[in-house]
Amino acid sequence: MNVGIDKISFFVPPYYVDMTDLALAREVDPNKFHIGIGQDQMAVNKKTQDIVTFAANAAKNILTEEDKKQIDMVIVGTESGIDESKASAVVLHRLLGIQPFARAFEIKEACYAGTAALQFAIAHIQTHPESKVLVVASDIAKYGLSSGGEPTQGAGAVAMLISADPRVLQLNNDTIALTQDIYDFWRPVGHDYPMVDGQLSNETYIQAFQTIWEEYQKRYKKTVADFQALAFHIPYTKMGKKALLAALENESETEQERILSKYESSIVYSRKIGNLYTGSLYLGLISLLENGQLKAGEQIGLFSYGSGTVAEFFSGTLVENYHEQLLTNLHQNQLTARKRLSISEYEEMFNDVLDVNADNNYEDTLLYSIASITNTIREYKED
Ligand code: CAA
Image 1 (cartoon, helix red, strand yellow):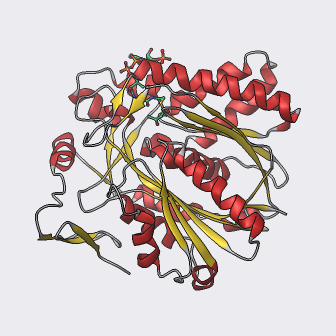
Image 2: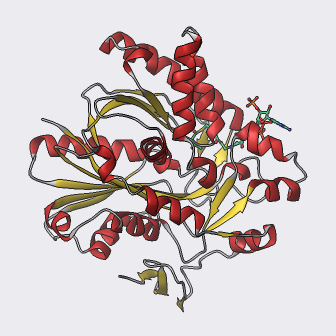
């Protein structure tokens, strides 16, 4: 049975910081951020905008009333959960008006959780071809002001509708995962920001990709030549490129150029948004589909990486007329409509943290934003 991504969209908060502004404020050469890290802008959110608001705003772009009747599972992958117990997917299910006889839950394993959610959804559709699953990867990547990870921050969500006979990307049954217990990036309970061993995380990411790519080629008898493009988890755009270059070492110059040019298409949006954690690979996929001039029938390889670590490589085949399902204009308009913050505005927004212990009402122009806190419960402004 053909199962895969039927619709896909992203949402990012309406503010950003320009990386030249940030570099100058931190007394760093701007080329380090633009070239060394590979980021031009970074998405920033207000305290009234959390992972539920990003998820609902992203999902709203793709769901019809008919979809809401057919969806019987809502899965949110996140590492920025808003509750230690209740899943954000339950709130999302209500906000979107999805029919009640559904499962709703959250999955965690750092940035890998979006892929775990996707694989769970695929397995469900294989046994229930008439149903649809809403998968959302939603996160706020925050490392702290003036921290080493600051230029690799970001925020937002990617929503995907998974179904039989998908109209965008049919997933091939050729997945391979790798688990290794490594502390490269983690966030102990109660910590606002992650603990990061930056250089170890870079090395582990590359090593995980090399290990999994070698095994994938052996198991599935595929090589670079089988793919029109390889899409990566993108904590910052230089990271995926480093892993890709390692895999392309023994390829001809023509082959390297072919794959590298598609990699550039996959990072157009990430360069302007930054890290979405669970959503980064799928933001890269949207960017590739909307900027990469790919053709139906071509195969895309996808590398998912979550610190800690779990990685997975799998692939998909583009469906006939897939481009008719894309929301390219909506995505591009969303990015151009954002407000550029000065560094002092960004720092003020960064430090203005939501206090869930104080009852309060809030104003925000964004659809699906936090309207109030009462007895620690977040109420959202709705459609
Ligand atoms: N012009 C051009 N390039 C410059 C430059 C300049 N003036 N100055 C420095 N650079 C280059 C450096 O040479 C380096 O390039 P290479 O990596 O190719 O050698 C690059 O800029 C970065 O420089 P540093 O390594 O000195 O940067 P740093 O010490 O400030 O840390 C970082 C970079 C480790 C990525 C840090 O931002 C960080 O910890 N980020 C968060 C962790 C992270 O994203 N890890 C990625 C893998 S983990 C993962 O994927 C999960 C996840 O989402 C978090």
